[in-house]
Image (cartoon, helix red, strand yellow):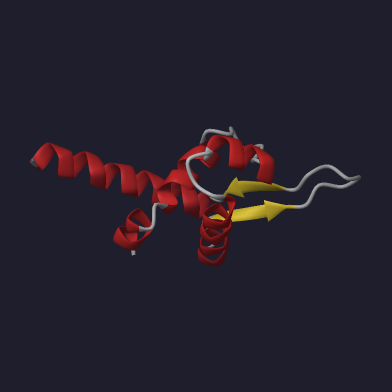
Length: 92
């Protein structure tokens, strides 16, 4: 499963959300942070991450933009992905 997440570049969104220090990011902020990809690609990847339970969407009251935030499971997966990458680099 970790390989599939890495292959689909879902770890990139997890990294960006982990760096948001728990407050999460709105759609516009994610678009700015991931400006290399189209919004359609980002939307597809967010849907995948939501389905896997690696991120959550928090609705903000009073008209504030909703925010995507990484879940504890997402942090665990991100740490595992980074650890696997470090080990792979050391073996080469």
